Amino acid sequence: MMIIMQPGASREQVDHVIECIEENNLSAHTSVGVKQTVIGVVGESHSVSPHVFETLPGVQAVQCISQPYKLASRQFHPENSIFPLDGFTIGGNKIPIIAGPCSVESRSQIIEIAQTIKETGANALRGGVFKPRSSPYSFQGLGDEGLKYLSEARELTGLPIVVEVMAVSQVSEMIKYVDMLQIGARNMQNFNLLRAVGDTRIPVLLKRGMSATIEDLLLAAEYILVGGNNRVVLCERGIRTFETETRNTTDINAIPVLKSLTHLPVILDPSHSTGHVNYVTAVAKAAVAAGADGIMVEVHQDPAHAISDGRQSLTPEAFATLVSKVKAVAEAVDRNLVPSKFSLPLGER
Ligand code: PEP
Ligand code: MN
Image (cartoon, rainbow, N blue to C red; front, side, top):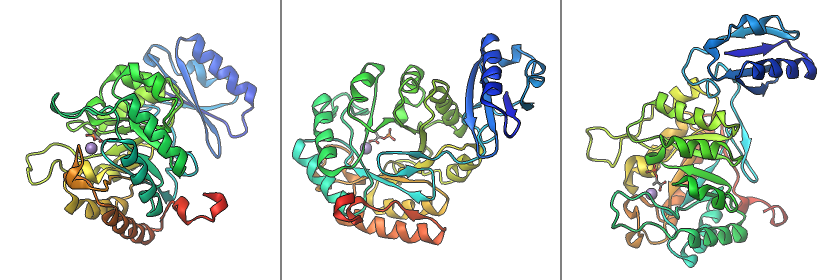
């Protein structure tokens, strides 16, 4: 349930409501809106009557949240969630582009591609160091060594880094380096991992599982939110269907549907959703037209020799074209791209 405080309710009144929630063995999640404060009550709230809270000083109303996910719902938090990610915001009018190779392959590879994509419009650098490969015989990633190369690329370019975490045991080391933790499609319902990243205060990019419904994705996000980490970005990356021409099927519907069900930012990864360079730019444009808050795309300086996902990785030139096309679509829907650090005056980069 959610407790809506009267406009202008005092700090003491809010604190008193929170105390009362906790005395009933429930947890309180406060959202301070433009007009009023709303307190989400989660836990086994069916065991406590809403009347307990209705008469407390400063309370305007108590409402049930009808969806199974509570803190992720638009009902609980009607305004879009907008939060900072090292130099820009995500979830607002400006659309960031996260780009980089599927895997970190070497120090020179990641540094070179980071510098190149920064010049052509990337706002954040992606790169996997622990890779969830379908086969145990495929390259599994450089591990901690890769993290060091990524953080060197970050130092040199100023681009924040987005890196996939695959196991609870990796979380404590990774948060020393990364700006955003990615939970991959295969781990979307690894509930222990979701709880572990929910205990951190690092933004999380949560990718949709390839067979997960939109509701499954929102319930996975709820695991992170309930831990107190409210900086969660959802990522549509294609789902498995009967179609075999593409690696996955981009569920473009998911963008407007998620935007109506949740306040969390929603981005699209057209590289994994299509699996082929020829389709990435078209689908990136479609995502922005449909209301996506960002794009994540794989780029490699030599896709033919990439260790993983070369078929879907754009060359730096193709990436530059994608950025200019996506920018035109963003402007057509009254949005814009986050300006690249490279376009800023020298002192502000
Ligand atoms: C990735 O981003 O490289 C990745 C493995 O993605 P997904 O989890 O969507 O397959
Ligand atoms: Mn990949």
